[in-house]
Image 1 (tube, rainbow over the protein chains, first blue to last red):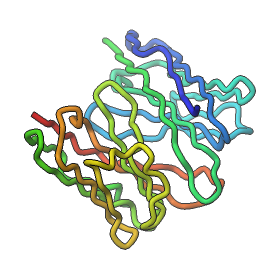
Image 2 (image 1 turned 90 degrees about the vertical axis):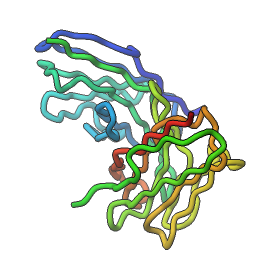
Image 3 (image 1 turned 30 degrees about the vertical axis):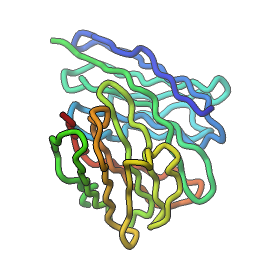
Length: 114
Length: 116
């Protein structure tokens, strides 16, 4: 069964601190892995996309890593800001020819407190 | 570039009533998705279109939910009759069709449905 699991479920950190969110997946055939940020009341917005051959990708203060052998990914947030408070969703794309199918994790709810 | 447009933003209905949501994807995007996101959970795929054909509707409760994509562009999702457990945010997303490519999926802001 294609599944994406994320941990922790929720996290509270102080402004300025770093944090790391985890994602484990059992998806086949694998095409790519994405991290989305979802602010309350809004649709998800893409942070990074990584293919099988990519180990790390950065987007500003966000750095995602991918270990395709262990089927694990992490999202590291550096020097957190209040605006980082959101849900972070790990999404794995199945590699079907002709179209892509997305499998969503349940997300990690991050709260950055002053 | 205009994003994915959804309407309405909010809807409150009584159980057993019907409701319809509308989505206008990004111009040129062949793939359109409808997701249901219950509070505190990740989005769950209801239906996926490739142009105006259905690619995956395995998780669509077909006894009450229906969706269509007119001429491969706009799409509507209907619930009839609604149940209390249908209360959720309904997200529409679209992406380009490129076999094997890492195409981005863009999401609309969603329609928040409350069934009372």
